[in-house]
Amino acid sequence: MMPTLTAFKDSPDKGAGLARDMRVRWALEEVGQPYDVRLVTSQQMKNPAHLARQPFGQIPAYEDGDVAMFESGAIVLHIAEHHPVLLPRDSVQRARALSWLFAALSTVEPPILERETVRFFETDKPWQAERFDMVDARIRARLDQLAAALGDADWFAGAFSAADIVMVHAIRRLDGAGILEGYPRLGAYIARAETQPAYQRAFAAQYQVFQDAHLS
Amino acid sequence: MMPTLTAFKDSPDKGAGLARDMRVRWALEEVGQPYDVRLVTSQQMKNPAHLARQPFGQIPAYEDGDVAMFESGAIVLHIAEHHPVLLPRDSVQRARALSWLFAALSTVEPPILERETVRFFETDKPWQAERFDMVDARIRARLDQLAAALGDADWFAGAFSAADIVMVHAIRRLDGAGILEGYPRLGAYIARAETQPAYQRAFAAQYQVFQDAHLS
Image (cartoon, rainbow over all chains, first blue to last red; front, side, top):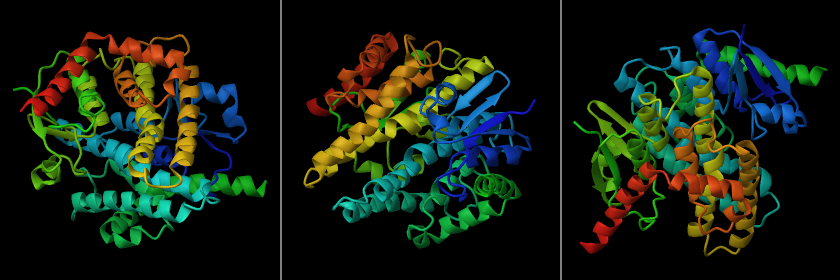
């Protein structure tokens, strides 16, 4: 019995791979685990059946036998716990990967998501330009620290790990913002991730969903 | 050899227990693990020695022998992994607790922290009142969902778990905002957590640091 991933039927990102099911697809591809997909519309995401799986009416959700999960970070960690290729068994390396996994979610991603709030929900506000400046300064402060921490390394915690899946995916949301261009090390880091075969398979799978939604 | 927790020497919250070392103290108290504390000033947090422990110049950091960690969520999870009292061993219950732990950090906490940005960094902006309204609406949407998900239960994932430590601590930051008063179930949840002896020991320990800083 394969696990089931719940994802957008018609993602607002139009197949750009920015929705958080991409993280779970990527993790599953890295460990070679086939999966089923349940697609939900934005209307269905408000229904009791979906809220029972995802109390905030978001995606992704994940079911594997009796295990039922939500939150992309939790699901990626759950998958990684059973596969040393995503989370080292050695306690020192594991602690480092966990630190970076949570840093991606709690410290790096929030200002990047706040930028989306400014972009989509403050278009009619006289303050939008000034808010962009303020949020972009917060993002740059984090990217400065990230670039310093990464240094000349390929990945954040030794070998590639679950932390890189979430970090790369969070940073990719800056595509088109004109910010990442100032960070060649981080740009190379994203490019390195995007050449991973598992990333490419996951990206193609979510892109197919977008295409199917618009051909039907 | 005891683990060492790095925390604020003089927390800006004046001993209210809102800084994130509180989460780690609480987890350590729940599992009965004594610990040493390294206190850092805001100036010291910019020094290379601190940045080597915490790449974003924040607190907490955590060292236990060769294990070195940062990010409160990661540290709490690390402690919980070795203690079923904070993270169930049963795979179904564990997956549920992990989902709620990440929900607290990735979905509940960000709008609450954004409210602090409005409060402290937008005081001179003509838009501050309107931004408070917008952010408070985001917070209330999450609290509505949280209250529905908690229902009549005492804790978010069956028995008390690491998820409740982070959830309670994130929500407590709303003290004084006039929002939580509309959520009696969540108010009772916070009150229930605050009566736990481990919470009280952790709170007292961080309060002592504040007192020491102001008596010296």
